[in-house]
Image 1: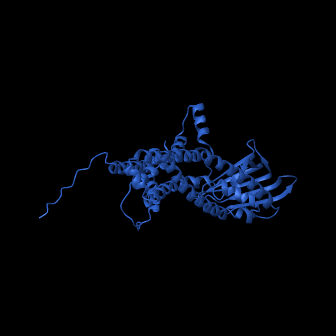
Image 2: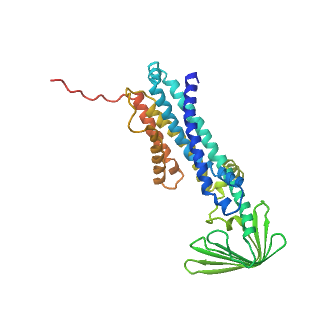
Image 3: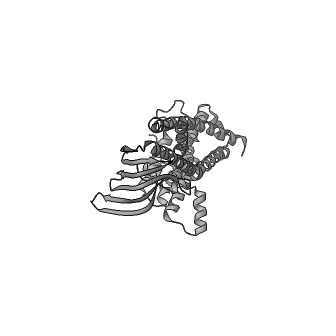
Length: 363
């Protein structure tokens, strides 16, 4: 890679990182506002608010990273166009250096996005759920007042008869109405807040029953001697836990190689994470195909070119959404953007000569 390619990589990176930093800062403030009830309602400190908001940022960073890279390419080439540097580069036949810089920028961004989607996001999700579980234990411990009906979260009602010692509860009752299709009722003579082998907080119920009532009126009851409930399940707004989202791709691959079995949901999750890298490369190729060639226009175009990456990203997601939930449907959007970008690039480079239009003879 020569100095020109490095110059272009620095130019694109500076524009992309500046926009990415602003967007992540705004999204971080939005996340803080969304979970502000952690401080106000749940009685936690400001460090819990900031920590949980930071751990929820990786999924958002993955979504906007490749869009910011596309905008970085647009702004970088627009600056070269405005200073006439782009004309000079083409006149001196520096196409190889130009696209070498674009390729380096695209591959480097794809590696970072893949690291975020395969390692950082699952790790942050796991840490966030552990943190939420510890907050849940604190909430349940403080809200369980003897002889008073308490609502931990909307849909969860808890009543206890008394408290004895550290974490010991007598006459426990909980009603879970979060799932509109199934209502669950827990009752036990005694209960205790403890930690399981994985250091997750659980509520140990002793000598009780578990009742199910479906929306169709079907009723069933199970008696138990001991039953454990994760405290995080009693404090979540909805009961929907995704274990794969908390497992890194490295751990999924290790488990698959060790067992020799590759469940369909695991393969789908791995392909979904890898698709983020292809999506980044497709965006860079498409925007470079549009912006890497000079023009004679002196005025700024009426339509802001910085909006083009947003339109491309929307088209990408729309195509992938219409392609269904199949494994290869995840790649329909990125591959479409990549193919269209390559076609535009081939036409503009005149690799394949286009037929000349017949000219009208002057009278």
